[in-house]
Image (cartoon, rainbow over all chains, first blue to last red; front, side, top):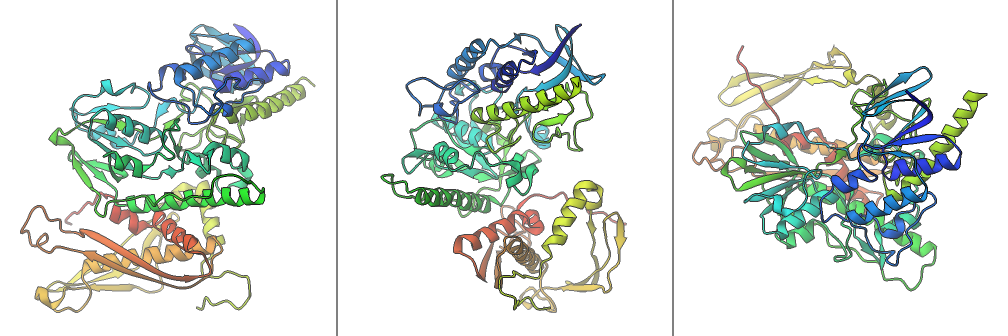
Amino acid sequence: MKQISTVIVGAGQAGLAMSKCLADRSIAHVVIERGEVANSWSHERWDSLKLLTPNWQTRLPGFAYAGSDSDGFMSMPQIVSHLQFYAQKITAPIEERTTVLSATAHGTGYCVQTSRGNWYCDNLVIASGACAQVRQPQFAQSIPNHITQLTPLNYRNPSQLGPGGVLVVGASATGVQLALEMNAAGHKVILAAGQHIRVPRQYRGFDIQWWMDRTGVLDMGLDEVDDPNRARRVPSLQLIGSKARPIMDLNALQADGVEIVGRLAGIRDGRALFSGSLTNHCALSDLKMNRLLDGFDDWAAAHKLENIAAPHRHAATSVSSNPRLQYDLNTGSIGTIVWATGYQPNFSWLQLPVFDSKGRLQHDSGVVAPGLYVLGLPFLRRRKSALLDGVGGDAEALADHLTLHATTHAA
Amino acid sequence: MTHANTNEGVIDNGVNTEALIGARCAFAETPEAAAFTFRSTCDWVDGTESINSINGYFGLGQDHERKQTFKIASDHPEVFAAKDSAPTPPEIVLAALASCLTGGVAAVAQHRGIQLRGVKAIVEGDVDVRGILGMDPDIRNGFGAVRVRFEIDADASDADIRALVAQSQKRSAVFDLITNPTNVHVDVA
């Protein structure tokens, strides 16, 4: 049995940022990691993936990108070595290859059972990631057996694909990137698009993230949104970590030959049924994009940004007047379905009454319960909470809370 | 009930947004109260003519009776060798879609502080009747396409008006049930 003030679960950017913040506050802690530092980035992402945020936007507590390509996008090996370097720099006390089996209440603290013994702690920080599992619809079970089902967690590259077409379900960052790649590899690709957030990579000569960062969009807090639950469900921006195209959207995919259909609404008798709401989802997306860009233009005018490119609007999303409403999966022409339907964390090891009726972890700006914290979830405290660039600020705030709480306890 | 408001600066589309927001809060606390069941009872009259009676519904954990029973009759036009005493069922569906989206526009406009002066929705649905006559298995019974055109007079920009219409579709019950599959269970007593 080992006793320590704080146990951090997960040695990704969130766990490392928290480790740095606790070290700065002289709080004894250990970071438990099932694999190695940045394990999900090494093992649960596809080969061609690059970060959606530019290199300058990888600011972690006490550590920022120092390379020569600040506008570039890190590949997976690059982000892994970036985080490994950070872990060494801050001498994070990491127990690698140690799986957390459960966390339970123990006195006023917690007991963390791992594959290499138990830890007793006053504070527990959950930093195990927002993307541990793919959120798949129930009807995935009704997909005919001859179709291979892939998720972004087990897809690596197009060589994995059998013959035939691919149905990519979901048109956020993951869906558009995989549709692009699979189409380029010579497969017929159908992309089922529900709610999606269309944004250009570049706007008026700057990266979209530059605009979101400078205008304060990313700093937006929970008190500035109507409905935190809704803000936390907003899908990822339809982006790719590449400057090759100014915008990577449904129009670009259609120009490449990808067929766009409505949201996959169900499977009936082996037929995929697509929603007739595609036109509206595209209209909503176009309206939202233009509203965002209007905001940037207003900000640029108010801040007297001169010598920058003129405002520009992209053509409305082009939607077929009669998009396909169903596809017979029994014909064999579709060989693979890819679920790009979003991610969710895996808190199955957390054996505490901290979940709502839908199984979501309940927390107040990252504070789950006395001494129990979570980091790295969408809109945990701010719009940027789930970004590499946002987790540091949250870690600082939660480390402050933890320190204050620990002091109160001792007194 | 008039929605014209004489107080300058006060947006009134006749929608009680506060009550709706209150309901959201209440349903967050007790989600079971949000389970509603709507009903209609349809009596055959003669030929293709029938009349629906709509009154009771279940919601907020209990059955509700209204002060009056609403009647919706349906029939078919003379070209179908019917009496044309009432609209066809597909026309009632189009009407339901139009009413659902129009009500939604008013509610969203109220929430967004947009004063409406007039809203008209013109709905069309294309049907190839060879489907219902069983003449061609490749032709569906239902609408091949449905089009809705809104004419909205409001104190708002074109983009804001389009956003109202888009948001109304996003939250519409009838839009959902026309655009997405629904399991329908038909039984005989």
